[in-house]
Amino acid sequence: MDISEIIQKENLVFKKTEFLTDKSLSYCPGCGHGTVHRIMMEVVDEMGIGEDTIGIAPVGCSVLAYEFMNIDMQQAAHGRAPAVATGIKRCWPKKYVFTYQGDGDLAAIGTAETIHACNRGENIIIVFVNNGIYGMTGGQMAPTTLPGMKSSTSPYGRDVASMGNPLKITELVAQLPGTNFVTRQAVHTPGNARKTKKAIRKAFENQKLNNGVSFVEVVSNCNSGWKMTPVKSNEWMVENMFPFYPLGDIKVDGNFVK
Amino acid sequence: MKELRLMKGNEAIAEAAVRIGVDAYFGYPITPQSEIIEYLMTENPEERTGMVVLQAESEVAAINMCYGAGATGKKAMTSSSSPGISLKQEGISYMAGAEIPCVIVNVVRGGPGLGTIQPSQADYFQAVKGGGHGDYKMIVLAPSSVQEMADFAKDGFDLAFKYRTPIMILTDGVIGQMMEKVELMDYTPRLTDEELIEKYTWATTGKSKDKERRIITSLDLDSAKQEQHNHHLQSKYRQMEEEEVRFEKFNCEDADYAMVAYGSSARICQKAVELAKEKGLKVGLLRPITLFPFPKKQIEEMTKKVKGILSVEMSAGQMVEDVRLAANGKAKVEHFGRYGGIVPTPEEVLEALEQKVISA
Image (cartoon, rainbow over all chains, first blue to last red):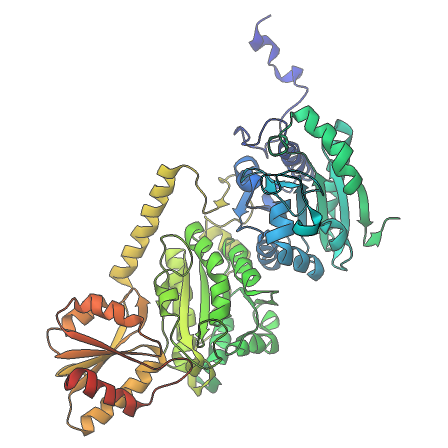
């Protein structure tokens, strides 16, 4: 059988959403970013809101997210995405606006913008990919690097006494009255990816209802920065990241989940 | 009928913003410009025109809110004073790189550091020579009256959208705080969303099915493309130098000596020119209205007629460097300045002219 006979419309079992471009991802093989991109754009596609969605790429590994997400996008200065999103959303209240940020961007240099956008209850979505390291710049210690975890700027492991504690910013923003939906998910297994997709869908639905901030953390790996194989890094993530950053909903419809 | 009002400079620019159809103002309080956001919050622009006004958590956030709004084609404005403008430099550089229109008002106070809340012109270098990182320029408008505070808001947005770039209105505590008669412009309606989408095809307003999607970014990791982008930016700055130079001259026709001064210093120098006339001295004044692009040719022209030039600023000597570059050794150029929040008197200025330029 010739390949052209196989590639027929009636044989189609899977199709990439048109809201992802055909560009090869710039992410390392094994990285979770690509999965999160796909999930987000599938939700945009399924909700039919591609014409009304404006995304904001951060500084960090996902700085080039605008190359892959096939919608109108802006690239923001380091940490400032929630302020940029505020500027857009206040002027275009009917558009869907999301930020896509990593842990250094969102929980270190952009802490003020994150907390205040959340506290004002901006009707935006913040997607926070937490891999506990600065991936783009070559594996330095991040605000979410675990105690004892090695990085290029904590080569002997994060010493909490001198380097401070990892910041659980998701729990922190959940305390703010402006956040409506706060959840922590992962994408390392098909089951987890499905849960993340459900969360992203809820976040977009929330925005339609003007409910305030939906904050979706995705705990992810960084096999390059962690100096592990992709498989090993996922195992390490489950064993070390998840106990510190437990998965699940923290706040749903403005109420804490017990 | 003309609408005349007695207003502070800060109030005039805020009222003008509402009238010219600004879509959004984002700001953070700092003396001596807090009246701008106070006025806007009091005057309910949301009800009057639909203009959004938001007090941000910082100057950094405010400029980035402008980035987001401006990148969707909205007329976004922010204001601050010197220390706050330093914080905005990152955002201004990003806007220049990503080609986002915006009007930034700097009501300058004395520095460095926390300095003083009194007027100063010591942010000239920051405004004119870049301020933020990278090769970029901003058109800098320098009002010298409350009327111009109002008028330049409109001119500023026209220029910001003509060139798709951030522009600065550089004023100081004198102009911001003093009250003068101002003739207010008629209302220009804000663009509807449909009009905006039609007009600004570059704006990120959501990808429509029949159009290419839009990306607003200052990043290009391919150096060759980044250089091309810089060529494009530089060509805009050259066009500004050719088309946007603005200045004003007083008594320059048969002047033996000239002063160069902008903003509130130009007002003081106008008086000094009158005092000089009483003494039988022929002194002219050239007031740059745009600090970038700088009226280089006009100053060069002036060197053919005058024996010497005094650059007068409320700084330790910043604009004087541009005056010297323009004069290019063809005339003696001296500087006189008071700083740290001190405003010079016309008598002091005239005395400096006599000592540094005329009798030296």
